[in-house]
Image (cartoon, rainbow, N blue to C red; front, side, top):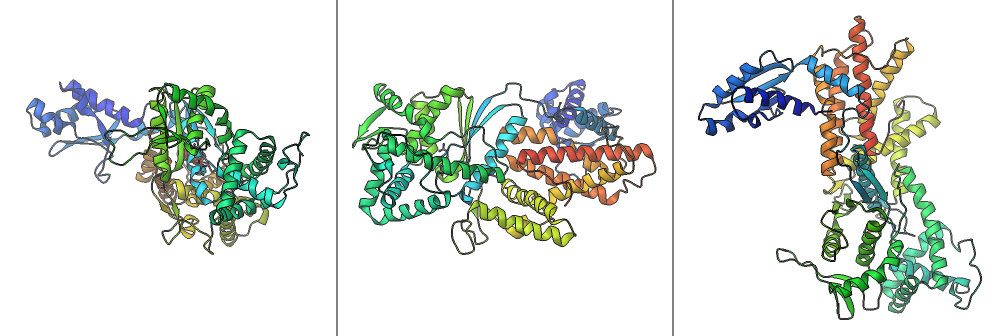
Length: 588
Ligand code: ARG
């Protein structure tokens, strides 16, 4: 559906044209003086030079043409040449009715749908999910949903880290503890056991132990490096052990992500790119892109215009081992082969920006992708604690995602039980939904690239710019609709009358922004735009609600119109939060 702002602009442009001016001057925007008007056109000022006429005269002529136009309630020429506009109530209510009849609530599907791969989550095998990975999951999931809603074909890939030194470290530590395992017997010919030689909690202890040892003990580190190389070379016992590590970890990761309402289409991993590495390095050498430098194979990626040094891309280390860069480049080849995406979006900590600059430049220079393929890095900032330092547990340790979720859920549970007596089971399920909204909204309402402070008290509050406030508003609407239904009313889609009050018009003016907000969020990969939209919408609704006795209204047509308006508000809010990756309970 056409955006309301474009429709209004069109009317004003037609009026400029009808007065003999270039229609382009009629472009109209949302007013930055809402106390004076709703929309505003400043074209007459710009037209002054071309037509040699006082802007106010131009504005007056145009306004004259707009009189009687049913789109407008008021159009006024104001010194020195503004055109101040108020839109008519019937135009708004017509638009809302078209919205409610539209399957996607007025959002047009992309004319040229793109195939997009989103690389997000990016957890590392055998390391517990901690808050450092939270942002990637939350932001990536939301962007996936937004792009899909905008009509694109989106493939979300978790891109597990399973191929680096951390694997060698774990293998080395397992070997130290259980040297007799068949995985380490080079002459072993039989089948490897089905059962993993460790549990997830053992694994989570093994990795940090190994990592700490390798920092103190050079020989240990050497062993781990060698184990990494042997794994990458395909030594069967190492591969079998690695498969166990993978299985145990992935089961745990899936449980964690599902608690976050995050769902990946693909569970691909760094190691899946391994088969592409030999041909890739051969190709880069043969074409003269890559050369040996001190034993390492590198590709230069610096450009003349660089203000900061961009180091060369290391394709292979001198011992032949693949690096993070190597797997990322090979993964691009793999993705091009499997999916031919128009765009790959990486949702990763912004501290990795240089890595992606190198990878993208290298991929373009070596023609792994053509100009038609977009490579986008969406770098996000750090989630900090109230002290402004990266978020930690109270004891100062790394906060596990599970712990964060259960802490917030417990906080919400307490609040819900304080608010009113509820069945504890229901309260628990509700607390989970509301807790998730607190975490996700708290994150997404900030521009992704910025650092933000995770403030539990603020994020879990039912008031202010928070997830729980949004859910509270939705639940309020649901409860009115339920009550209306219980009293025999029908809440099916119906007629919406022009607004009867300023607060009702205010609510309508927010709802109609939906399609342009979604288009912007999709274009700019910016979920925070949806957050600020629903916050404004929730505020406008609550203002209307406090001023209006909806169910007690005697005039049936008016009452039904309000119920319909409430239904639409609920739909827009629930669709929006679904795009952010959370949902609302029935009661709270
Ligand atoms: N596993 C990486 C990390 O923990 C993130 C992976 C991001 N994606 C990528 N294609 N490099 O830092």
